[in-house]
Each structure stands twice: as structure tokens, then as C-alpha cells.
Amino acid sequence: MAELGGVRIQVVRGTLAEPYLDALARLRIEVFREFPYLYDGSAEYERGYLRSYAASARSTLVIAVDETLDAPEVVGVSTALPLCDHDDAESLAPALQQAGYDPEQTYYFGESVLRRTYRGRGIGHAFFDAREQAARALGFARATFCAVERPADHPARPHDYVPHDAFWTRRGYVRRADLVARFAWRDLGDAHETQKPMVFWLKELVA
Image 1: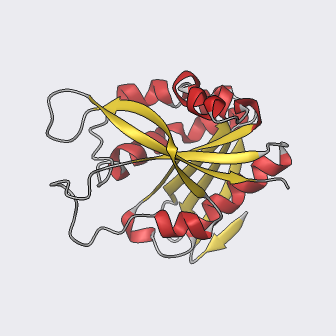
Image 2: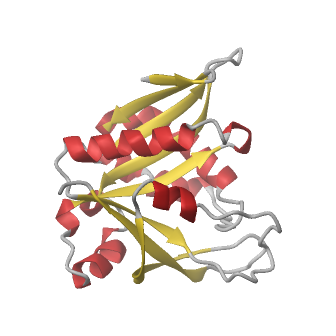
């Protein structure tokens, strides 16, 4: 457990994640409305999607709680679990297998959602530190996550948008444009779901 400017960082695992899933769902809907995800989420979908984190004994949730408020509040959550325990494992695993990676040895970083006003305090690094520590402690060979790819001229792209690529690269992750999964969701303002390419980023955790 650590503290960053009044924000307490704590780690919970397995079934202990259950009490935090509602807060995670709300933050996913709130934060992923921003570019590049533009996610038009629903509480109903979130409840089903997040079950795997409480169901997996080897899942990790990193919770950011603002302790300076009259009623301490969860303002950020970062998740990880064995890739093969993820509800979307059938969509994620094939790209890795085709490239020669063993999904059973891969710890998957699901999402990091943090309210805008809390960014820039080092909480993002704390999220990665805790998840990488968990992956190593559990004996996984590598960590991976997927990031959505949007066209550079996407009409919803803010003029001051800065992708996280440089941050992820500094953390030791390698973008693998040849490894792509595809997921469908409804963008804000759209009537129907559309498929989006999700590019893998990988980091080897053992020599």
C-alpha cells in the first residue's frame, strides 16, 4: 500500500475484487467515453464483463482511493489477470499463439481508468508497478495489454491528444503491430457496434 498526494494505492486479489467492481464499472463508462475509445458503455454489460476478475484467484486490482475527501472515494482502478482467465481469452489468445507466445504464460493487463483530475501524479506508474509485481510473483513470463488503433485523422480526435505510446515504451513495453485482436463496441453517437483493431503491447518479465 502506498500514498501519492492524498491518493491511497491498494492492491486486492481474487474474490477480494468483488466489492470494487461497481466502482470499476462506473469508471470504465466514464473514462472510456474519452478518445480514443469513445465507448458508449452500459452498466448491464459491465457487470457481466467484470465478473472474471472476481472469479479468477490470480486476478489483481490496483485501487486508487482519494483519502482527502469527506467520504473517501475510488478514483481509479487498474486490472490484470491470467490471459486464459479473461472472458475474452478466445479472442486474445490466437494472435499470441500464432506468434509463438504461450497464453498460459501471459498475464493480461485489462484496463487502467483514472479520473482526469488525478492524472499526472504518478498513479499510472503505480498501476503498472503493482501489476508487474503481481505477474512476476505468480510466475508469468510476460505481461501484455491491447490498445485501440484509431486513424490519425479521426474526426473525434482532440487537437491536443497525446497517445500513451511514449509512456508505455518507457515502461519497457514493445508495440507489436503484427499482433492484433478485434473487439466490437458502440462508439458515442453511433447506432450500432463496429469492430476495432486492438494492437498488442508486450513486455518480457523474465530473462
